[in-house]
Image (cartoon, rainbow, N blue to C red; front, side):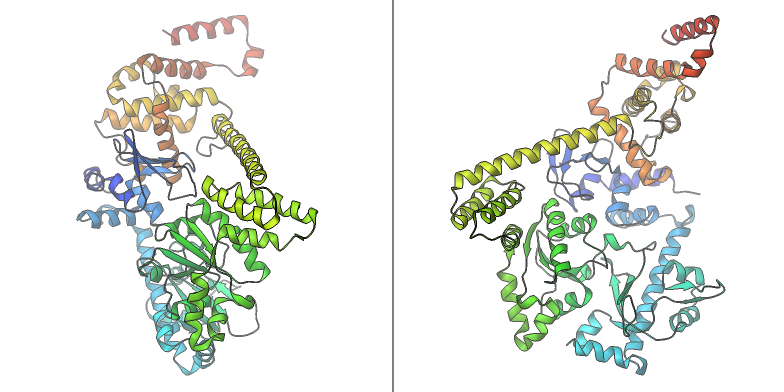
Amino acid sequence: MRLSEDFIAELKYKSDISDIASSYMQLKRRGRNLVGLCPFHGEKTPSFNIYAENGSFYCFGCGVGGDVITFIMKIENLDYMEAVKFLAQRAGMTVPEDAVDDSMSKLRTRVYEANREAARFFYSKLLSPEGKDALSYLRGRALSDKTITRFGLGYAPNNRYALTNHLKSKGFSDSELIAANLVFKSRSGNYVVDRFVDRVMFPIIDLRGNVIAFGGRIMSDQKPKYLNTSDTIVFNKSQNLFSLNNAKNSGTKRLILCEGYMDVIAVNQAGFTDAVATLGTALTTEQAMLMKRYCDEVVICYDADEAGQKATQRAIGILRNTGLVVRVLSIPDGKDPDEFIRKNGDKGAAAFKHILENSGNDVEYRLFKLKQGFDLNSADGKFAYLSQAVKVLSTLDNRMEQDIYASKLSEEVAVEKNSIMEQIRKSAKSRYSNDRKADFTKLQSKMSGRDDKMNPEHQKKPRVTIAEQNLIAFLVNNPDKLTTINRLISPDDFVTEFNKKLFAYFFDRIKDSKEPLTTLSADFTSEEVSSIIAIISNYSQVAATDSAMMEYINTIKEESIKPSDTDIASASTDELDSYLKKLKEKRK
């Protein structure tokens, strides 16, 4: 069984996509649509569109699209039923639980419950005799009991069955614990064993307060030093941040991006509750977009070693592309934040506040790092430094910002400012040209169908595929033309299987007097929904006249009876005459 169409229609009516989306992002009206910077990928020019008329959205930059349910699924990382429940609660509606198979939602709930119980178990073991060394380690890192409790830190005993036996005694099955990645099957496959053994444990908590994963630091010399939960049905390491659940309530519009768990916890204990960290991976675009929902500015606070500095350079580009203001904190003597705060003792918090408030922006940081690699006392060194500095400044969108840094460079290397600005303009023009070429290549790829994963026949048959898509969009936007279209063409005339399925789907819904898009997110995968909305969103760029409709239909019908090259080569004169006769009849 499934949720009734009446329920979904009412839910979407009470969950206006414009209102929902505007609570996550800034939107501006452009004609009949609303536009904004896409919350699902980094961009500087708005390509995210909301179509209030049919309650859909589509991003022309990353190709993500759907309805309000799809939007919540993606932005809150929920499955279909969880997104429905999320919206229903917001709209004051009750979901008819008995009308849908929610086995996946139930498993997710059990995984959440298993993780919560595991966190309690690890915490209790930290305070037990078994956790003596782990507790001593945390206190040796100057963590107070209050901080340990606040972050729910714990200890996984040096016993392969400790957590397994405990959770089984609480009624959890092997399959549920494997789904949570808390255990894994033994080599023989006959039993399960704990994933985390003899490790200090760091619970990872999502924005709704659910324990979704764990990080564990080994208490011996074994490798890896840190072990993290693998991706599960409730956790994706590239889409979450450690301690964002705390940072979002800090009252600032700033986030301090640290490298690891201990840095975040030390910075928090020093009074800066807006610190977060990635989860064993380099910063991702998804994490940057998540940060943008809660701040305007990010201060990168990575380690001063070579790896940390490389990670800083990479993070700057990702964060800037999301439109965030970026600053970089330089910690004296190459220390990490945790060590710096501890070394300064009672003055640690004040010392950290001082370097935080005096941290430079990302442009200053990049220019400073560049300068260290050149000898500015030589002409060659100056030229090489300026050449690289110009490339950095050419990436800035604000002309005034370019002017300010060009003035600084001019004073620094005794070169005319006008000469520097001229080189910046040339570099920017070159970058613009390269970007245009990349956009054109992307457009060519899209038109050719090379990247059409939903419709693999697109590349081989681009002309008829586009005609099919245009006719589908025409039908959805002009349901009153159903009778006319039905008289002229049927789904069987469609050449590509994916478009044939879509045309039949919308044809049946309109014939039964149903709104075409109401149950789209229930009837198709999120990838299929994005492709469908892309087809419909392009409607504004397609001719919507009766003559255009006839052109689409004729193209499809011609292609449907077209023999292959092999057939033509082996056809007799009579067979070719028959084909031409059929072609004339199709055009009538």
